[in-house]
Length: 265
Image (cartoon, rainbow, N blue to C red; front, top):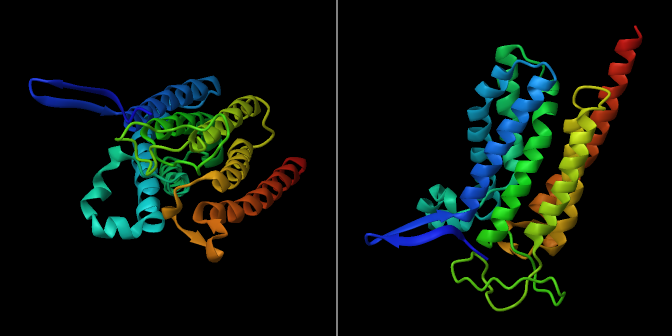
């Protein structure tokens, strides 16, 4: 599509701004301001969000990059170690960012004495919406491409700088499939925020929703280098989704029951 949102030469120098990086920055900024707005609305100390912002960016970026490097394409990065630091070229995995991001938020809450589940409920809708923009960035860059398709909405990535290996045949726009699913999920979470019955409900619901979306869309993904298990039957992302889904449902059920029991005492 358009790997560089800005691409021109000036005084003999190439001025380029990667589309993926630009969408990631936009996602972080919108997520920050929306989370700050909701924190103020829910009478939470906005300084908690301000102090946490850089921790979230660092932990999510590092975690998503490490998961991609270690699990999805280790051979390539072993052969090209300098590419590990070429973060503007894409190569992130949501689940890696989720894990390290949660740890970063959890330890911050422990140190500052903030309610972890309440704070992460405030953050979650904006984080999911930020992921929508991230997937649009993937589409522009040509990463996370889909399998070849004859469907009328198939996309041909003509730009030779796009990361797809096939610039001739139409591919499933799996980036946009996921972006659409995450947009619906983020809208649902925004409504749920105002109606949640216990702290953590928004976060748990987001985990369930994302696990389902990611598991289904993986069947149309064409970037097979990311790694598979069970003889190629499932990708690593699907394995994580299958593990996360029942765990999250059970955890949400048990936590809600404990909250009801505590409130009845």
